[in-house]
Image (cartoon, rainbow, N blue to C red; front, top):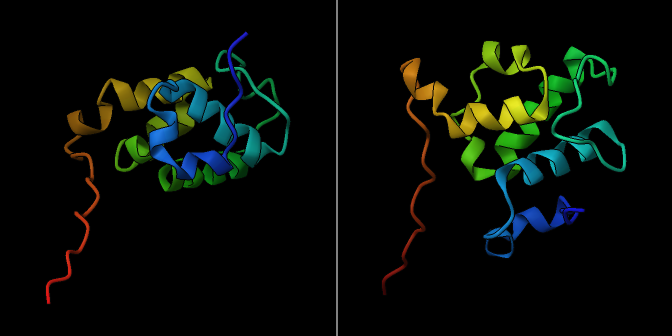
Amino acid sequence: ASPQVSVQALAEPLAFAGVTLLKRVEAVAAEVLQIPTISGKTRLAEAGVTSQALGALRSRLQEVVPECTGRLPVAKFYAAPTLLAIADLVTDGLAASQGQPPVEPLPPIVHVS
């Protein structure tokens, strides 16, 4: 059995250096769908996931999982049948092949006196 990931802990990226992208996607999906857990292999349509819930999931993933920012093209995201397929969108770099380069976070502001 793999360890469960709490969404609250996702705010601490160093704590998740060894946690797979899929496990983080599963944790966010469980939070958004308000269920205890969901497998990456569960077919989203069969689980009753609505398009509204998918929109909320996409937004939340981009908010709390840095690798997802700029790498979840809308059409492909909504067409993904499982959370595993959503994680594959990120790892396969499909967004870059559509001319949408990944968005990188800004560097921290360094104050000088």
